[in-house]
Length: 344
Image 1 (cartoon, rainbow, N blue to C red):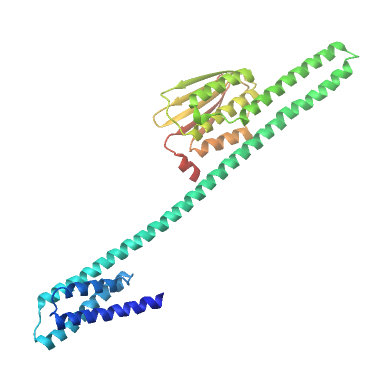
Image 2: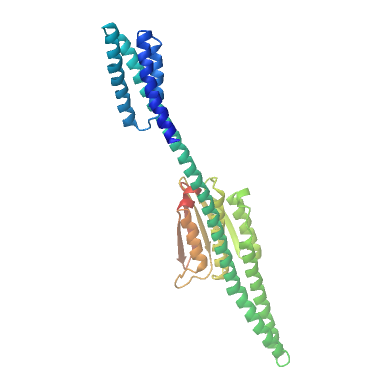
């Protein structure tokens, strides 16, 4: 292919000289000889992709044309027609400009196609990464729930088994103590049922994307009051703002985790969910009247909660006050988009 192009290039050089010579010998260098020379020059210059070489070749064609045709014209007519040289040289220069523009837009088109291919490939990789991130988050959530079930329900069921064995042995020796032990077994069963309900609530994927965050949190407060026996209230401050579905789900999970910890570790009786909207951010405050730990040592649940907030460039604080109780305070800016979150 390259040999064929070289052969054609040299043929066009010869054609350039023959066309110019023919025009001067037979039509005195007049029109349409100028047009033929310009078209041939354009065909020659189209082979050149390097701008510097194209300019040098264009100058060489001009010099070659002037020397060759000037010699022929002087030999035949003993004179020079400046206007003919001006017109033909203008055609050659015009051919050089057109060749440069064609090459420029060809390169631009090729670069655009390459950038589009790279962008498409990057988009596909980003989609794969997003799917992997969702899978990792789901796996982490399953591990957390499995650990919670093992550490809470499993522990309570083990204690229940021991208590029932004691009650069975005491039934013939001390009926009163046996009945008291059975009552303790009932309490353990109730507590285990609460843990199971909380775990099932965490596994279920709430339809956040089809409902507003406010409606989802209202429903969560009602169900937590019913299943966990923690009186939970929900309040809104400010004008609600439309939020991305995944951000709403993150906020929902944070409230869910905070309420679960309030019931499980703080043994709270009352809880309050406050959702506040401002011009630049929205915030969540989940407070409860449960036990205040002497020293806060974040476990898997609170660490997971912190990671959720950081994924959206937010801030989270844990407030401990003997009068006001324990609270989780999280803030999320509106500016961070979902695409920026995935990249980060």
